[in-house]
Length: 520
Image (cartoon, rainbow, N blue to C red; front, side):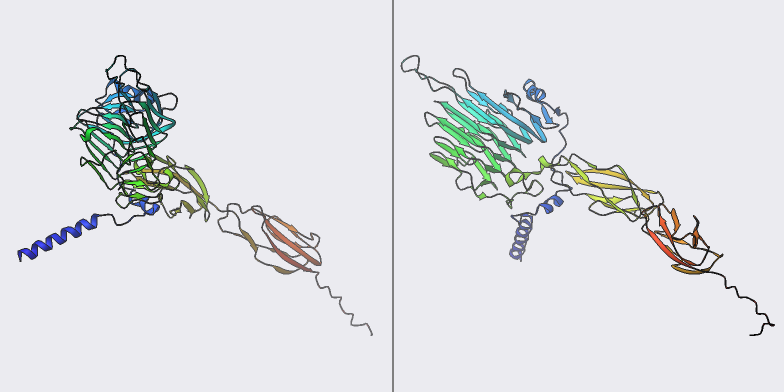
């Protein structure tokens, strides 16, 4: 019995775990939007975090590299070459914003090591970079060094310095504990060349060093070309981390993907230029079109995927397919979250029975979740469907508030329009009679009926085709004048609708008295 109970428990556990695993490989975009509507995929800035809104403030991080920072908007660096933050040991939370136009061309002097990237070096015990996008300018990130010159003395080794370049950071060392999540690097090229010593370049990190160093990268992607060239074949190039020096650092990469060709004279890797046991790559993919050009290739068993497909291991609360964005490869929702909404009108007047379509504007315009819930404060006055089509139900000038609500990233955004109802226009008119015989000298009244009954303008005009036969006044009173036929026409002032009545007028019958004395 114990054995059977144990087997039952194991089976139940396996089934429970299986239910948690993703079971789909291709997602419908509309479904993805709905699933993530109320999910929080970006937390508010950390307590005490310092807001960064421009280039100067971003650069000033170098003055206090141990603190926490967060972006409040995208920042464009394309105006001039970036001077890397020398060292960083704090937290940088992009809050779903992008640093754009990053470029630099660095030539270290003498035997100095060269580091290129948004940050030159990371060495803190607990460093976190998250929710941050980096778009490299077409001018790229270039880190170069002259070819090793002739040594000044015989048998003296000339040390020109190592080169380390990455989109986020050039070098992680000295036991740094680095977490990178919900980040991307895309755009121009990362290029390092002409050093006779070691060159290391990666889409995210140039090099990782020291046995105590730990790097965790999750829910991120590299979409950048990386190329290095070296006269001594001592070069390393990869999509995420150029080199794990001496395979000392522990590196974990999960739920991420790489796009962009990698080139070096010798060592190239889809993710890292190493397959050492200290490196763990799980639930991650490379584009089927990605190529490695070099003598020694790493991570070659990485699974591949193609555009318009979301890997089944990628959480739909984190990732989405967005047609036309990111070359149709998956995007991180954190960069497409809703900041605000508005309607094309804040007030409008709609006549009873008529409709008007309100347009919802979602900001930014590339936000993924544009699904709105529409509601009316009083459906007896005005209703609204889920496409924003408002229908007025009353005509007495009463108002209803129409509201569109979008839920995204655990937040609620709404916009409203005050709808005032009004009387509708005239749609037709009829007369109480269409034909009426009448004796000359007599008067009759014609009554008009305007449709709809609550039309906004019920004024009409009357006219007779033959006033000498039958005339009509402004109230529809017809006076017969003489024998004949006349047509009475009533016309609505609003819309010009017409109705007609034919009047046939006869004279009085006058009979002469008969003289009884007359002999016939």
